[in-house]
Amino acid sequence: MKASVLLAHPYSKSFNHAIFNQICSSLKAGGIETFSHDLYLENFDPVLTGNELGFNKSEDPLVNQYADELMASDFLFFVHPNWWGQPPAVLKGYIDRVIRPPYAYDMPEGALSGLPIAKLNGKFGIVYNTSNTPPDREDNYFGDPLELLWQKCVFGFCGIEDYHRRMFRIVSESTQEIRKEWLSEVDRDVKRITENR
Image (cartoon, rainbow, N blue to C red; front, side, top):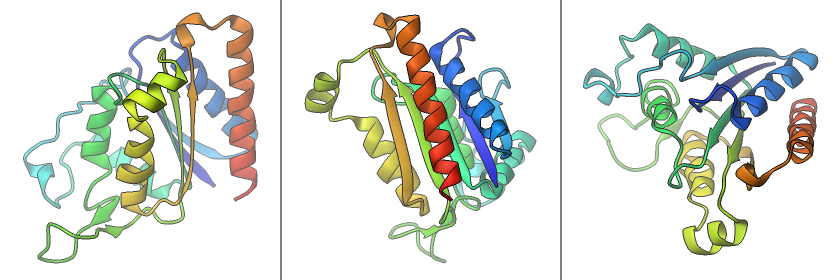
């Protein structure tokens, strides 16, 4: 079993980093080979190139490495804050450049619309978000756009049916005790998901 773990947060002391480290530790304890990447630390370029706009493989070695790991992984973990109802730009760039043809899906020959040919079937997608927005405002006013983005627009589009997402909030008001319990929840999630596959 293999897992890819992607982190998108620029501050090294963020709770997102603590989540990322907990996931990697839990996976290691479970004997799961892990490809872990801090996209900011690795200076990942999020800008899709003209060549990548079509169906060609990237000329960027890092993109191809991420894509190879994505395809080899049974579990796909993404850790990021909720910024304007979206992931940070560096993770959006990862989606643009890696979760695309010819890696994560293809389109029927001669067609640029319609249903994709999904290539991530059988994988498990897991997302951890942090937020400072209360749940009633997130759900009732904003409509939780990250839920739709990950479950439908990314995972569903590429054939991933097994999906788990957890939002931790309100991070700015959380105590060390609360954060410790949140990390315990992450550990339990990782064990439950990986042991049941």
